[in-house]
Image (cartoon, rainbow, N blue to C red; front, side, top):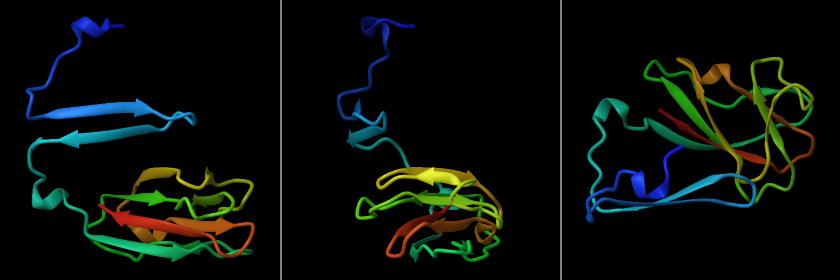
Length: 128
C-alpha cells in the first residue's frame, strides 16, 4: 500500500476530494475540467420507477444502445428494494437500501427486474 506522500497528485485545476461515509460508500467531489465523455458513452435515458410488491417487474425499457444501467434507491425510500433477473424476490435479489446504487452490465435494460416488500418505494435508472 502506498503512503500518502507517494500518491500521485493532480494539477491544481483538476482536484478530486474523496471520502467514505459511515456506511462505507465512496463520495466524490470534483472541480475543474477532468476531460470529456465521448457521445457514445453518454447516458441515454434517466427514469424513476415505482417498485411493485408481490411480483417482480422489469425496471427498464428495451434499448439497443444499452451497455449497462445504474440503479439507485432514492434516500426517500423507507425500506430496501431488490433487483435481479425476472425471478427476483425479496429473498434472492440484490438488496438496495435507501441511498444505495449498483451498476449492472446488460445489453437489455428490460432484463433487470425490481421488487419491494411494501408499496411506495422507487428506483432511479440511468441507462448507459
